[in-house]
Length: 140
Image 1 (cartoon, helix red, strand yellow):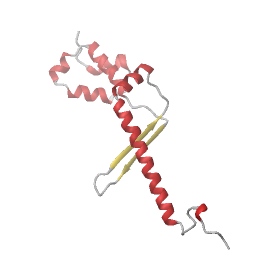
Image 2 (image 1 turned 90 degrees about the vertical axis):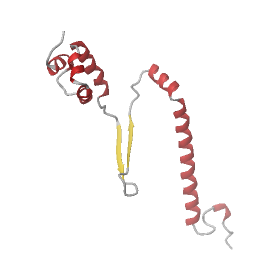
Image 3 (image 1 turned 120 degrees about the vertical axis):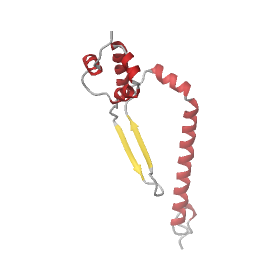
Image 4 (image 1 turned 30 degrees about the vertical axis):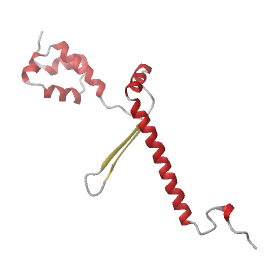
């Protein structure tokens, strides 16, 4: 059974809120493909697209940093409680284990580089003999 109005059939079972991802998906279909969708198929698509709705995170930091006069770099840091199931976490660990190793190495190299830079800057900025207390000349 096919209905002519897509808005009426989706709003009945999935709520009246607009779903950006669903609208983009449907607008990308050809008119013939859109006409071939049954009510059940369209409702299923609408429900599956609701999983892509933006979520609120406890930590949500977004920065746009200009870089060498070009468009710049956009950084996002999100954090919050873990909501994934243990099965999904296990599946993602098995699938992306290389990225975990690369990320850990990148953090170690980055931290080491920043620590060395800080130490060199500190030693160069301090007056001679004051940077390392145990190497200071004895007072008369």
